[in-house]
Image (tube, rainbow, N blue to C red):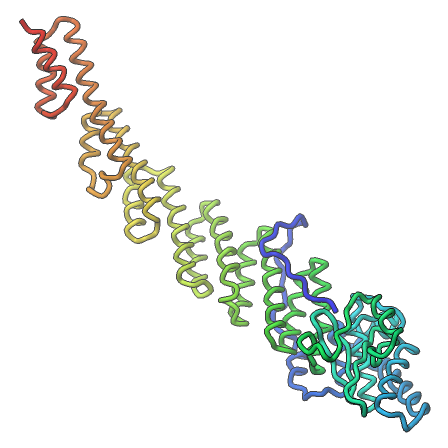
Length: 470
């Protein structure tokens, strides 16, 4: 029996780009109706549903139903002519022998289709178990399906109790007593799970047995990287037999297809697809991680292309699909990208209020705000210094709001501006002093000290000047 193959979400494929396509996310009406059938199914119902599960529809389905009906007629004639007094135990063994004499001939692990079983005689554990189940119903013997972690077989009710039937080998009836069985069965690669190992065995009903065919088809498609077609089959399987395993496998199929779309750059299609199925099948909590990753990828694509209005619309339209905490993080990223673009390319007057507003509304983190505020004020101070001098640059930095001017970067820049102004005055003083113009040199220092009385550099120059006076 084949298990569904789960791929890692957001794996990078080397395949060609996948164009967004319609993928069926609703169950077919047939399986919605089949779900309502009473258990156990009749042989007619089992034939029809197993062929449908194998992928047949319309005239092709009718053709194979007729072929099965003809085969059953032959089987019943042979059974009646062999003996009318077979015990249930002997009848159970007769069914297996008849199946191998007339139809079954070659085990192939992937061959789960009931039409191919009829045409070629090739089978696996699931298709052979379904075939045995059909024949046993016509023979009037009660039969159940047993599922293990990777295998399926039958068990029949006899006067000796329930007897296992490993349908993958002609020696599979009551396998524990036949030496030939183990040699033949080993070729399948499975391990027989005897009745005593109850924790490894699970008895399943007829509809769940049919669902195994859908499961195998889905797994085969996933191994071929045909994840789009696997989605619809996974939904059909879950509708036919709802349990935790079929739900998980269905959701894995959803995530796989979303990952394929994402890995090929169809971020919005990937997000919208997973959003739709998560809401439809109540899987939002389970898919929270991937929904966030997909929405993040789409957001980054918008911001990379500077499509900020579209990015904002996307987040607003996604609010119901994402938890508030995740949405808040994405909105912070959007605000950060918007502000970053303005800071890089806009003016100081445009950028500063935007950065302040983004921080006050929690649109950006404190570290981002700190970095941008520092850069903006530093650049503005440099611009002022170049146009009107370092004194004005120093005054500009000193007059900033308290929370901003106490940032370490601003404090450092403020000290640097002050020092640069001091050096400007000192250099002017030094030129005059060196040219013996001590009167003007002293005037330069005194005028500057009126503005900045405690300037250590200028006070030192004044002290030197006074010592030089006669």
